[in-house]
Length: 451
Image 1 (cartoon, helix red, strand yellow):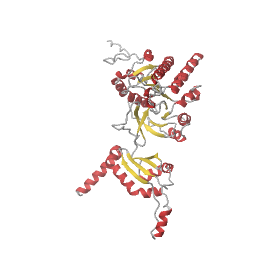
Image 2 (cartoon, helix red, strand yellow):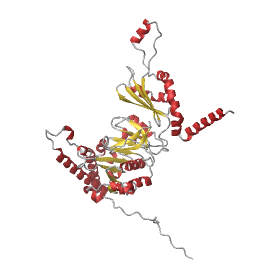
Image 3 (tube, helix red, strand yellow):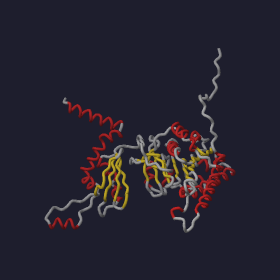
């Protein structure tokens, strides 16, 4: 056996091992080259087989007849750019006259099969230009966030999309969001990623965790206010409404609209105010909204109505005051009582992890996209963390947040504990921080051994 044969066998064995054990490494070393060559050499034939070509124009046919040349072939969309990424290829196409972006989207599955890729998605960038993102492997199987992300104030990376791009939670673009998911679906990990991503930013975190605080209270050092029961949650939400009214008074005082004030300097929300006067934005995380809406007596019903009213007011008016809602729950339907559907209508961002029935998926995406509903109910039980996200535009995508343990989230919150602002309106709800014990305290006292 020659040295060349031995080397070839080792390369093939290495490629096969990487593809099996480390698909990301395989893609960066071998896969991206093979995929780019397939696209370049098979592009015209694949486009013709997928019905993405247009017949030659009349003037080209007339020119061929006049010059006695062969009839010109049908033309596929023109490739403007082919860019490799760490998860796949990005193909930018210029459509021919008569073609539509929907034609490319409808052929995504055929393109995936023809080019030998794991997944293909497309979106229209502008009129006549379509971006096709192709992934070389299952990026959601083992989530690896890129080392550098486009992080801005109130815009944090929380998950990875199925096309390999980063999914951001942009509070200024989508102020309020709803997250649904059954038990052990990965909803808590998604929430930890939100808190861990917000911790380094100048933002006040407010938590409502009616499961006696088991989810959010370990992160208390970074929170400005916490509530662990419905009674305290009511007082906290009404305090937030009072804080919101005070912020609006500040905006009104600083508007000073006159002919001499430029249009760009007229304040309509906190982001139009000077940095020295701008109140700190507030993100309110509700861990289980059903615990706030359920009641068993007349007194609890009155409390419930006040809670839902305060949440609706914050959802309707809170954006300009810099108050953003993150509402989580297993179900979020009209069976929770009056006002719930009004609240849901204000929650633009929708994320659904694995759900137990189609009705729960309809609560998230029924008014957005039927395809998203179908995708949500097809999430398998052995992939916790996989979710479907969408918004009011009708677009949706599969995402998966990287696994963040509670210890990792606690360490991040403790590291940035000095960034938790003191808001006077929320001072009564500031969590009492006890010093961390130097040694672990046993849960039960051990009796001494007797002879």
